Length: 146
Image 1: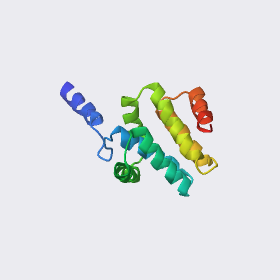
Image 2: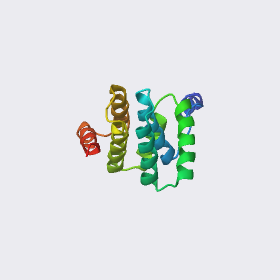
Image 3: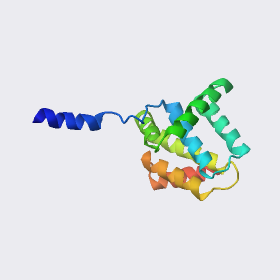
Image 4: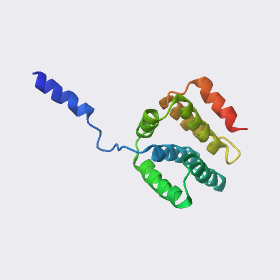
């Protein structure tokens, strides 16, 4: 009987077939892409901000950024939720780093000069998954405008 119960719970412990492990860079890039896509219009300022952010944040060159964006785009296209990305960030980042990532998301959202409600929704959802408090969420939003 215990063997059957153990087998039952082991099924839940196994990774879901559609869910894949991402490295930290891909996870952050994917969340940035989600914010950029949220308002359904791809702006050149947002694309430039995305590329610049990844270069600076991860110290990458142009070729590495292009490869990262290709990987992240395909990950986003096949993703059903943000958990697979937030999981990696939560495992590898401190609270301060997670707040910094929220600030990066805000900076990208502000790149075109306006915040679309869908962009804010995505950032709010991600902040919750990254265990960023509301106070830190607002502080990151304000910091992104400076």
